[in-house]
Amino acid sequence: MPFSSLPRARRDLYGSLLLLGAVVVFALAGLAWDGNWPKVLRVATAAAGYAAVLLAAGRRSTTILPWRAFAAAGAVAGLLSGAVRAESSAPLLVAQTAAGALLLGGFHRLALGSWRSLLPPSPPPGSG
Image 1: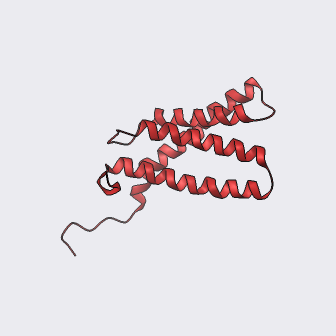
Image 2: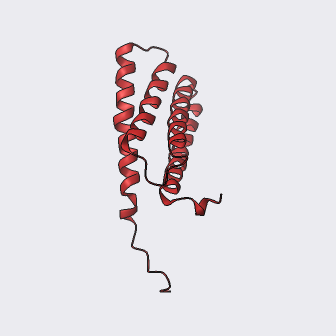
């Protein structure tokens, strides 16, 4: 199925994940340049988990995903990041999981739901 024939909400989700992926690639490159391999592993694992949950949730969706899907993806990212962390404790793992759900998932859903309002209005079809 061509990208342009997908529902707009799914195209927006894929586009936002591509943009987030580009940001993660630059972050990973900087961490690798510094030789911080444990953090490269943590960031890559968390980003992959976050994207996997959202891609699975949005596979058949024709509307924007509910907040709980983004919260679940953020929680998975926080959990994976904490699980890969060398010095981890149960309270830290809980805090990372909650922060991922609320911050990463919450902000991504908020941005995805409102970014189109920042664009200039489209001209009506057939006007030019």
